[in-house]
Length: 357
Image (cartoon, rainbow, N blue to C red; front, side, top):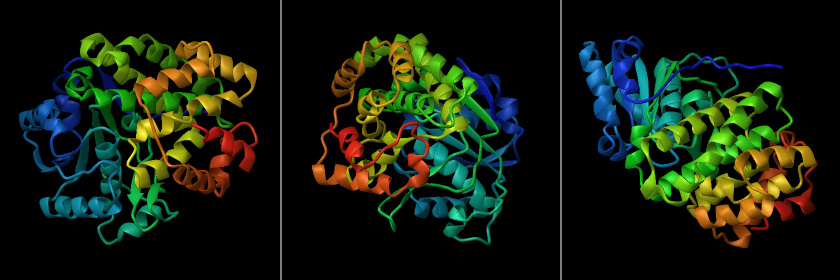
């Protein structure tokens, strides 16, 4: 067995304020990386800047991270950080700002390099990264992965380098400001992470322990997902903790076929990432061995794959052109590294069954 988790996690109400000194200790000048609006609306940005000001640290806010951030945006943010003299990076938001923060931290530490360095197979240093999640999906606060948009390839590709945040501060109160569609789609992303980590050739007893725990907590939140207007503070924190457990799980195993299929649907079809991954989950589970199917479905609170599929169709419906589905399938079939993470053999015929949505 193996288990690697270098991120220090702080979870719970007002954790940014309660651990302000830890956050400020990461450097002298922070580059805060976020989107244009949500971190202000949910007050996460204000909490972070208050924490830095309390301890006399300088900061620059870069608030131009788009959904599914591109390598071009990473380089623009790197330039802003270099101009400001930033020596650590704080990502606030969903997976997009947190993933971007990791890539920016690599490029800040290597100012002489161009964007291709993100995909070079070399040992790369990075500036320290802190992560403040505000959605309940990616678990990027506890993974080393940064998935970036490559317009040259018309898809999303993970950065080669692994950059785990030094510190993650997860407070469920931020989730209560998120739109219903964001809560649902990101929660489906967490479910996909948990499922793909459990049904995975890299899985072992430790990774399945975190995945099973995450699935059980996710199951307890199902009614809140169906009716986000009733989301309590406790349920919001539970969803955030589920996403973190899912992130811890995939940090050990990687993701498998549903995530690999999702990238083209998101890039070319504009389908939100979580929903794009979730639409393949039921069919991915169907072809796993009986014990794996039972473990995942029972932990998540479903009788069978059909019930899961119906639930996800109601929660985060997806419609996609058959040509786009086939393009996604062909892309994954050309990716032997991703296919090896699936614990059962997948050929072109079975892939057609998995993409039947």
